[in-house]
Image (cartoon, rainbow, N blue to C red):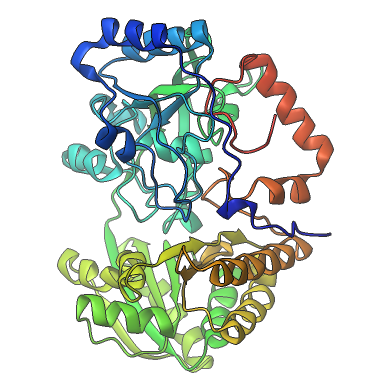
Length: 475
């Protein structure tokens, strides 16, 4: 299985479509001050956290405040065949929101209302601009919480569009399992609803799952209904240092294979621990580190923690530190949540090219350790974190975006990593999505026949290719 051999993801194909002046006039007439063509606003909506730095911004930004605003904007785009790109908080890592074919950005952050909380049914319906932290703040009085935590305070709309997961996925699943229903504006500007608040359904095609993970290429989500979970009676967090990455990974593998219902288990390598110590003044031991969290009854949490501590000890785990209060848990998790920012500040002016492979848990050690050896030999500075409980991990290669040699080296490492993951039965992206970065890898992973089927769906739902064009696959 051959991986792509170009650095196309660092120099994406830019084919700007014409934006008619009549379209901009009509947009201004409909939205007034909620439509901006100011360069600074357009530039803010033409960047994300990826390594892409040379894509022109969109021609205009519309600040939507309701579903009708989105529908009207998309209808105008359909009339003039102008691309439209949904925008949340801009935290994506794969170039999802870049205007590679021009068009407009629809900013959904003002659509930030929690519409209905159905505590008895363990569901909540929100607008797409609600962030995960905002949601948990608004529902905390119900004794429920929303567990998906990708690290960044992303919007629920953006998380749904990229099928995000994060630190709690090993126990609570990803957005795929936790989105029950959607309201979506189609490429024709029509408003449709998919799914219901019922826990299951056999009613026709699963359009909800089709939209979740579609990265804005099939429609714009304007309402999302998600599952909630009872707050655990007891929560305990722990960190444990290891003499090697292998020891830490073997601990995780045995924990999962024994069926311990651990809620979170995150790996941070010694490089990243050093960066976090410098950034947040934490004083952690600069060794491979596991951060763990246990949810359940007091007795259940105690039993889980003791089991994992015993497993860790067999692999040389030491310096266990436990936390049961919210303040103590927050302090311990600071290392994980600050990892990205600590890393990019360790090399001023750098950009991070983030990898995102996921493999079956039995092959995690093989994939991770060989990748560490390659990356160490390359001389490229990097950070390594992983949601290793479900076989997902991330290298962040810290490159100077103006240094072609560093870009080439980072891309070669990424190609080797993805090829290895695919050989081991894994995927090129566990949670970040395809965007621009992984378009060639998608073809390698799924085969041309599957990509052709995706194209057929895209053409049927978006015949003029206006919904976030140039992402996931070429048309």
